Length: 379
Image (cartoon, rainbow, N blue to C red; front, side):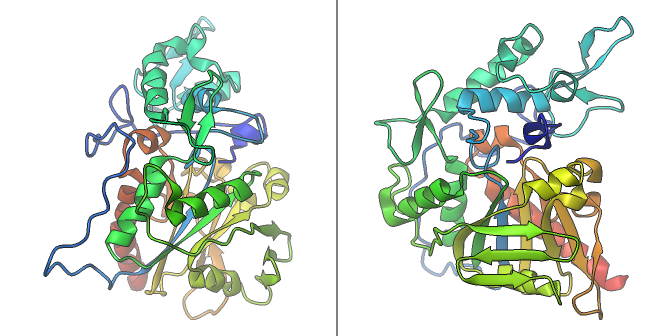
């Protein structure tokens, strides 16, 4: 998670409406617990689905699969507090005072002219301890409790919070996603994409988990993990991806990096170009490059990031769509065109509370992508 809010005094983040305590969607499995389910094998005669597209899942780190930030030195309490301030909506009233417009939290503004607290007052890592923010103290307490590590703290998978308690470092819903995709015999790869500095540690932890060392997920399938973080650097001339001895450029063909991502197996990660984003005033044009090809029926790319927006002026991803019959040529897509189809704005509260959250995001995107492709073929 690399917030415009966070890195440029962090800007605004938003969240899907979910009653008062959560954000708009049902609680799913009613699973407030964070433990893994046992790894189940398909019963006799129950063939697993294998004909679906390969999934390339681009996942942010901070405020997506982590509730912490090494760059800003935020532990779980501070990170969760700051996040809540980005999804709480109000306005300055006629007397010049802040007025809440809703008791609910949401990714999107509840009405026109609504402003999230973070945009108005800046980053407050003690948001729910302030006079205005205490309105949401119960939501904060509930979700922090869900993050607590059960049992003896693990040096790889647990992190010590500001209060001295042990918390999950990587959200269990991420490991549950890996577990379920394996059970469904899906062909997939995970590409971690961050502006931050956490990649080496996260890749190490993921590799340990896939070796059976996670106490709550002992049966994860072994997947290849490239523990060497790559880099993506942007310029007016090209986008250059590098990892180890590998070098891939969008020159002369923008499809080069698209094909590279599509060929990946297992789990790896790349640090995106924060300075390029800052140079573009934190707009979509300078964001993490991301390509879609509606004519490629073999793969679907999905990007999940808490800083994804339907508004290009506040979007962290730069989506580009390949043009038909013009090999290597792309058009810039608006974020709203691909929002909830290939671009998913992380609902962090659901990611904390619901083990199926990421899996449901993927399945929802797959269904909507089918319609998107069908429509693109008729244009």
